[in-house]
Length: 532
Image (spheres, rainbow, N blue to C red):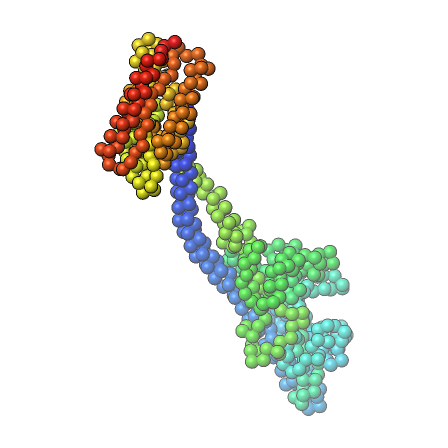
């Protein structure tokens, strides 16, 4: 196989390979991507529903617990009002015994207190060692300066103050083991409407938070409980919890780690948002749907704002592919995951491309050898006459001229007989190659047989064709003069201008050119010797 054929085969092979590989890959990618994205959407919907369910469940559990506590604090406030005498005095001894029984039954209140309007504790029941204990009068304190007293004493009847959730502090230090507390309080009035003080419950939130963590184990990601300032109250990483209680951890919070998402949470009571970090589903804890005072939501006063329940599924989690919003990253991840399939497609494309390129080359060779002379690479008689006929038909439409030049190589038989057929072949090829180098792109050469050729000049009258022939003949003379060949190149020619498109007329024009060629040939033979 010659170099030209190798390069041609290589070019066709690469073309088929690119088309096949890209075509099959695109088809496979489109089909697979469609299926994958449909699957992702189904899985994403399931994931979203699951996270919404968990957030709703967590919110309802917290809300239900808050509802029970609010009912308790209102009940205790009512009990004080019921036991206020005609002289506006409160029977503290009776209330203390009743509250002891209440605390023993509930087991969730670290402290139950009644603080009078001057800030003095009149009743305090502490719960520890699995039982309730009444604090003696000598150990009662004044709480007038405490934030929860000042925030509650100014409220109206049945308004409920809910403090932030924090850790219990004893003697200026955080109590160990940690005791998460929320204070629920409400002002107390007598039957006549005189304000008597406040009732306050210190709710021990440990078990509530444990229930919270148990529920979110079914989440596909993480579930947080945040306070109103963006600090973690509940996090799977305990080192991030209660950071606001420790001076050296003040910067550890949700709003610093996810500032953009925190802004979204601040602007909405509930919702779902995909961000660059992943999926966030969130809701306020306290709202009119999960508290008993639905007819007047203003009766709930939050000391430092609302809590947030937040579900977070990061892009690094097991379902990270479901929360990716960049489609290019999704496609690239798919490619990396299934690259072996593309390798298989590539190998298959190579095999098919090889077969197709070989088949095309074979067909082209068959077509070529059916139309071209194998030795000179010019049109053979059959294909050449068909080309000439088409060219004449087109010339008639364009009102242009077509000329033909009949040529014959002089002395070919003599060169073959004396110098051998190799020299004769060289003579033919030289004659043809000179012609091809001098004619224009739209002109072509036909080998009629042996040493006879026909040059077809497109859109050229006979005079112009003669000028082209002069250039051809001058090149022959240059070769004869400068190249030390054992023979001279001598070509006889005859030119005729084609008019009409009848094939029989074409034959007559070719015969006319042939006759003119023979006239020249007879003259040339008189004065030329081919073999030097």
